[in-house]
Length: 232
Image (cartoon, rainbow, N blue to C red):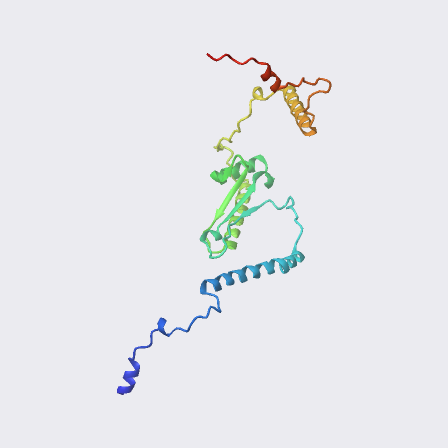
């Protein structure tokens, strides 16, 4: 029993004792060097995938087909790479009221039911949902809500014709004043002058006209002809 207890509580050798380390003969890379090589191997791995595996995905490419007139619903979702996010289950549905093909009475009732979810500037109704844990459930919910709104708008039991619409005023864009615009004739003349100047510079014709040679001036002769000033 004593021998077993002694072996049990015996202090182990120091794991990082420098006195018992093997002699380094400089025949291997350091830890930092091995990390650099590992990074290089990882980069080369993805470069090989880019060169040999990505071109194979072209076999699965599909031509873009624009939506037809029957596909009027637009769904917007968010997807985050890596760890999931709570906003990923949210779905936003937008649809143009003009695409629903409603008459004036049905349109009036639909806008009353939509309330602040109707945008005057874009003529769109926006519905969103994140009450369910999965994206497909929220997508089904907003789609069913729109169907109920349209069905209620087409219900002629009570058209709400006596209730006026209280819509926000559409945003007006600033119009550039016509009197601030440059005259067309002046713009053309400036453009012509610019083109002529550019053509002149490119052709290298910025030279003096022939036949009008300036007289050469001998500076040394003029200096020699001047009389020297008398010294006092």
